[in-house]
Image 1 (cartoon, rainbow, N blue to C red):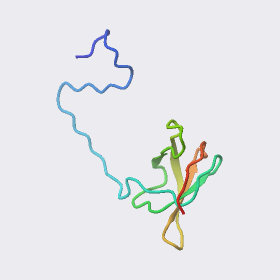
Image 2 (image 1 turned 135 degrees about the vertical axis):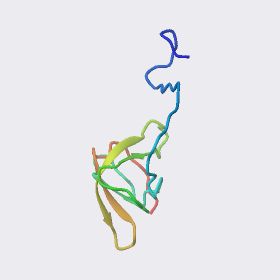
Image 3 (image 1 turned 90 degrees about the horizontal axis):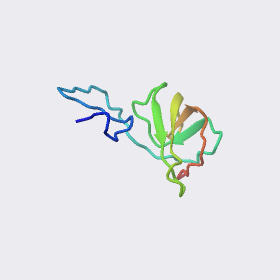
Length: 102
């Protein structure tokens, strides 16, 4: 039960009946950076991006000691490279360093 006295903040979804969620799961739920992503970069290079589309939102997880350095960006372009990796244009530009394995 949620009432005025609860300490639930603003991240609550209360369902008192039936809840149906519909979505299409992309072919690639996660991938790895194949090169470093540096602050101010507007593109990243990833191993795969099956079913990703311009306008999708992705999250880059932290790769340094500060666990808060994750960030959400929107895909602005997708280009398949000669080696089958994918260059992903992003907006806003990258804020934090993210280590990529080449």
